[in-house]
Amino acid sequence: MDHAVAAGGRLSGWRVVAGGVELRVKAQPKSRRPGLAGWIEGVDGARLKLAVAEAPEDGRANRAICALLAGALGVPPSAIAVVQGAASREKTCRIAGDPARLADALERLA
Image 1 (tube, rainbow, N blue to C red):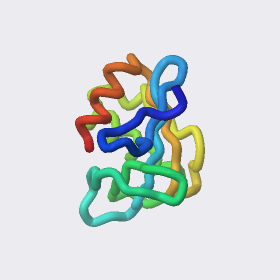
Image 2: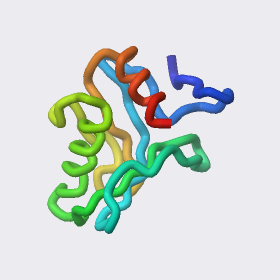
Image 3: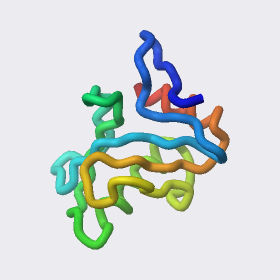
């Protein structure tokens, strides 16, 4: 399956991969209000917008993104890795785990 179809028929910002899911995110580092900001539409599909207080230096913001997602999805931070866009605000994160359980958790974030 390339993308899961969200309620309403539009493509969601995640897809099932071997051993888990890949999630597209838009990060806002150095935010005064860290947390999940919901799903947003981009020119090439949806992504989860999130904000972290850490600066994008030495991978601190990426580690904070992984920790934030881990808490929201109920997985250990070590199960999440930034696999694309490490130096960009637009990122792809791979989340290891049961794809069905992760898909359910991602749908609840909507």
